[in-house]
Length: 291
Image 1 (cartoon, rainbow, N blue to C red):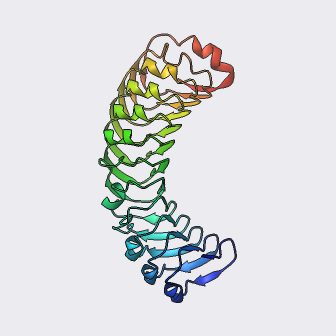
Image 2 (spheres, rainbow, N blue to C red; image 1 turned 30 degrees about the vertical axis):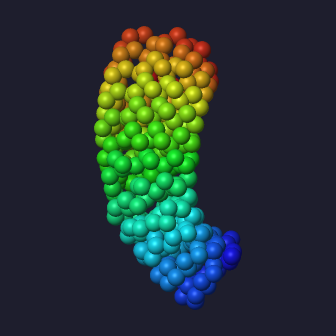
Image 3 (cartoon, helix red, strand yellow; image 1 turned 90 degrees about the vertical axis):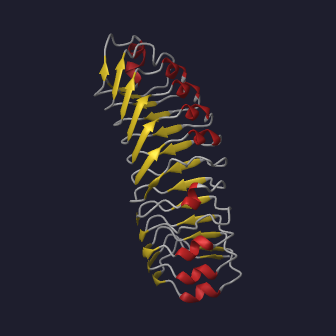
């Protein structure tokens, strides 16, 4: 183990670190190290943990890092890295945590990552990563995923129902299309779902009403249509609901019947008709409301 995190180290990483063949954990996060990540890190075949986050690294992530068979934890966020993710990431089938948000990464989403069943936490937000996510979702151990603000496309598959431990899913500000699958309603541990600023269409599935732990739901700025399912009224833990800038119609009466924890409701720029529900009168003193 080599822990040097949270200091004021500067300069470039020495190539000699690649000679520590028995190294299992390397943490250099929270410094001001710069330059590229040495390709010789591919020699560290025993490595399970590599934390290089919150530095000033630039250049591409070495493809050799993707070939580390025992790698479980990889943190690269808060740098100036560019180029693609290593194509063989998770080749060993052990990768649990991958964080590389707030960089300048681009290129395709590796198929090895899409098929990685060991994933627990993934944070790749605010990059320029491209790729079809239609096969994403077969991750039985996944707890947290944020891939918002990229260039992802494709449709949400029913494979997401396999993510029974998932608590947070953020895929906003991409180019996702198609319908929100009914299988999303089987994610019983889900607390936050943000699918806003995509090209999703169709109706919000009634199965969303099964997500009894859900506290935040945003599907704003899409092409959703139809009415708000009355089943949403069963979400007693819902605090944040934003369906603005869609083509949702019908009445909202009864749709938030039992959402007594609601603090934020935004339904502007839709095609609602009819009377405002009496429930708003009960909740008015506790929430911000845009209808």
